[in-house]
Image (cartoon, rainbow, N blue to C red; front, side, top):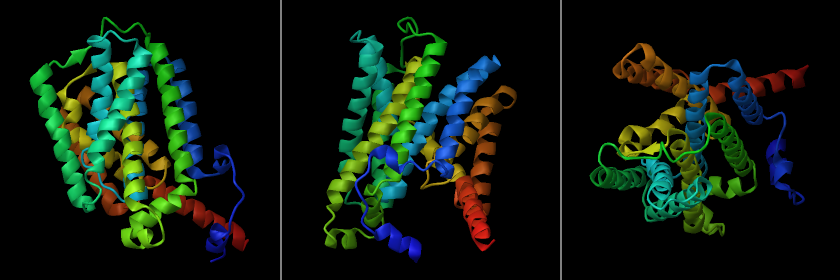
Length: 329
């Protein structure tokens, strides 16, 4: 009760960095992920470095879905829509309009946020289940449009990318760090209280003076922006985009990663992305894709059964239990 009363007490305005809690499990996980990312190139394992680039894109992608679902209660079963748009627009602007990579990446991300947010905004009055299906259907429209227009080969910029692997990797670390830090600041800001109120009860939040449609739409645009960043980086390091980025399995990928890692905390998407990325990128070296995705499904089911709050939930529980033990001592 004392903690709740303290939370409700008015606080002095503080800068964004003031809400960073150095002993927070989620912030520690982010720091460890960044340290590991810096160390990996020095191991000399080129394939591990390649896997890390997938991890950067997928972690940002998963965080965008989790931010939307865990804090505003909106469900997207088609998060591949902004992710794929970010990838496609970036490649298209470079290939067709000969724009510089940096400019194409910025415009591609903004276009993904604008279109993804606009599409999502049309669904804010639907219940979460119906909203998720509606966004998924929109993503499937793009799946078929890109398949018809660009075929199975899609678009590639192998000859137009002047950046070295090391440069692309460093860009990935920077994008990953900035994106995840931004998500962390949102999750620990006072603004999250409005979002959680909306998630809990739309009507009650509206009665309290919260503009529910406005904040829901804002979260859809923000989530699309973050997913677009992940998609743009995905296009940069693969130098390719095709219709499969809008496929249903890709839409469910961040959901599976969030389930494994845990929802509602930044550490969840990071942990889940590490586990699933390693699983789906390393197992195919020795086994078929069928075996890989079977193992992926088993991991998700086991986590749902044994630890519904995900791995981050277990870490948070141990931290709270440790804190209680210290207090008793």
